[in-house]
Structure formats: C-alpha cells, structure tokens
Length: 136
Image (cartoon, rainbow, N blue to C red):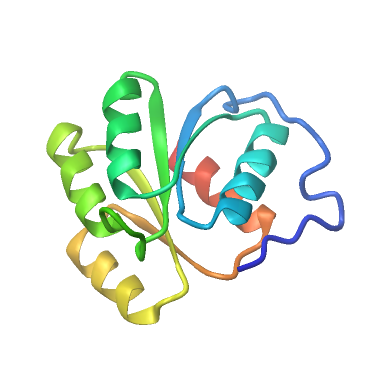
C-alpha cells in the first residue's frame, strides 16, 4: 500500500473545513501513520486505531467529534465491515471511506452501504484528501 507524498500533495496546510476530526482505522502501522500525517498536514484532527475493535472503541469515545471514518476492511480482532455496521448502529448518518485493496470487498461494501465512499488501494494523498473533503 502506498500513499504518494511527492509533488507537494502533503506540504501545504489548508484551513477551510479542515478542523474536522477523522478516525483512521488500519492494521498496518506504517500506512496508518502515513495517512495520519497527510491528513494532519492538511489541517485535519486525526484519531487512529489499529483494528476494528479498537476503532469502534475510539469512535464511541469521540463520537461527538468524529466527522469521517477512514477504514480498511481486512483487519484482526474485528474487521472493517463489522465495525462500520456497529458505527452505523450508533450514528446512522456517519460518513465512511472504505479503503481496500480487495475488489470483492470493495463491491460488497458499496452494495451493502451505498452511503460509504470506496477508495481502492493504492491511492494517493490527494485522492484521500479529496475523498474526505467530498464528505464534509
């Protein structure tokens, strides 16, 4: 999985809607940290979690602040689909970006939750930022 940081994609801080809080859930620590850094550079507040169970707990702790959830699907402890289902049970209108390298999961997730935005891996920092902004 790679997020391209070249061409100034994560170099400037913008301030229009960027004070939004984003929950990033991914079991790959390097990717999770890279996503966090890119979003923070763009001015977003970011909370991270290492799997769906951790993500659900972080969501419950911060549900009044989280505006978008960015999640992988294939994770230990609780997969992304189960976490999304639980989050929608708490906040039916929560905005979710599913980032997956698995086309079958991508199609099934979109079919199950049409309100989710699917971002196929690999994606660029610009694609991620644009996806987040489109949901705010």
